Length: 74
Image 1 (spheres, rainbow, N blue to C red):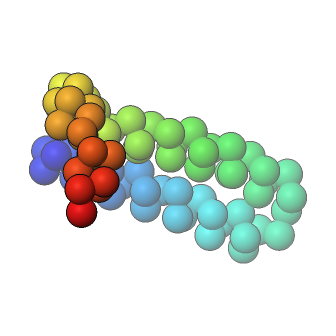
Image 2: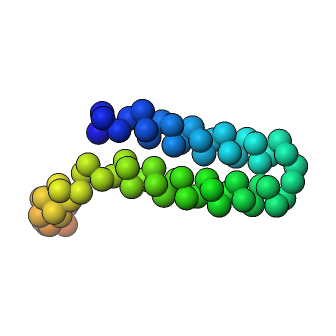
């Protein structure tokens, strides 16, 4: 997770910058294009952020399979 931190900050900073530029331009076409770019960058950033935890998702499903049973005992 720490190796991708600068890349993640850059991507999420770009989303903020694109939104700010779109608002400042007062041009709906430019705002729409920048919104689409922001969505693509957001999806890429989400992939980069969640990719290191992919191997452990199966363990989380196995670990949480009795969660409803523990709630009933409480």
